[in-house]
Length: 362
Ligand SMILES: Cc1cc2nc3c(=O)[nH]c(=O)nc-3n(C[C@H](O)[C@H](O)[C@H](O)COP(=O)(O)O)c2cc1C
Image (cartoon, rainbow, N blue to C red; front, side):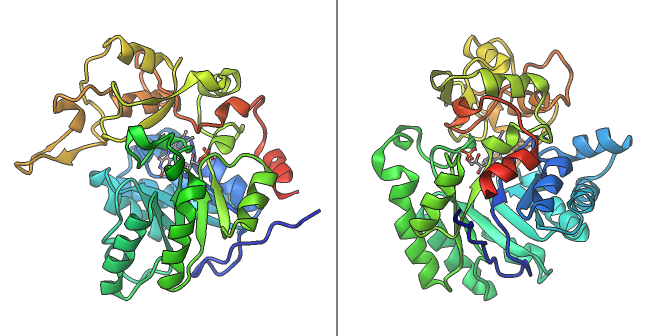
C-alpha cells in the first residue's frame, strides 16, 4: 500500500496528512476539527457566526474575539496535541474578520486560512504571531497579487490552497466559467504551481471534488503537495450539520446539485447548493423577504455605510439565516439551505471521522 506523503507547511512545526476545509456556518467546529487533527490532519474551525455556536456550547454571550479563542482551545483539547488546528476566515465578512483572527491566535491556533476575497493585509493583522498563513485562491492571478502585496511585509504564503470549481460553498469563478474545461482544477493547477515556485516554493494544496484515497494519490502524482477536503467531512457524525442536512447529503443525486446565482448568495459569488434545500426552494418562489436580523455579511456601500449586500436590490436569499438553520442554530421557522461540493451525490452514509480517516489514510 502506498503511504500518503505528508505536507510540510512552514511554521506548523510538524508534517500533516491533509486539510479538512473550513465549513461555515457551524459545520466545522471544534468536535470535527479536533477529531481530524487527532488523526494527524489539519482540522479547520470555521469563523462564520462562531459567537452564536460558542454561546450555545457554553451558555453565555461572547465577543467574536472570545468565540474564536474558546473554540480553538476546545479543538486543541480534542486533538490531544496531534495534527494542527486552523481557523478559516472569509475576507468578505468584514465585521468579524480581524477580531476572529486575533482571538484564534490567543487560543493557540496553528494556521490562519483566509479566502473569499484576497487576504492582502493578513501579515499585518497577525503581526509576527507564530502562525502559518495560508490564502485560498482560485487562479494564478490571485496568488500573484497576494505574493506581490505580501512582499511589502517580507512575507510569502506558508502554503496556498487552490480551490477549483467543484468545491462546496462560495466559488470564486464566474457562473458561466464553472463548467468550462479551462477553469477546472487540473487546468489551473500548473500556472499556480509555477507562481509558488517563483515566490519561494511554498506548498500548493488542491481542493474541490477530491473524494477518495485514489484521488489524493492522483493529485500527489500530478505535482500537488497535498489536498483539502470539505464535503466528505460535512457528512461525518462529528460535523455540525443538522440531521436534515446530513440526510439530504446522503439522499441527493447529482442532478440535485446546482449553482445558485439568481436567487443567489448576497456575497455575490456563485454558491453550490442541494436544490431541494427548503430555504432554496422558498427563495426560488421569492417566499422570504430579507430582514437581515443576523447581520454577519455587512459590507460598506459607496457612501461608506455598512449594510447587507442583499438589500441592494439583488435577487438574493438571506444566507445568514439559511446557514444557521442548516446547523440547527436558529429559529425553526427559518428554512435551511444546504451547500455541498459537486461530488456530494457519492456520499451514501454518514461516517465517524475515524472511519473516514482510516479510508483516506489507508
Ligand atoms: C458545507 C460547506 C461549507 C463550506 N464553507 C466554507 C467556508 O465557510 N469558507 C471557505 O473558505 N470554504 C468553505 N467551504 C469549502 C471547503 O472548505 C472546501 O474547500 C471544499 O468544499 C472542497 O471541496 P469538496 O467539498 O469537494 O471536498 C465549504 C464547503 C462545504 C461543503
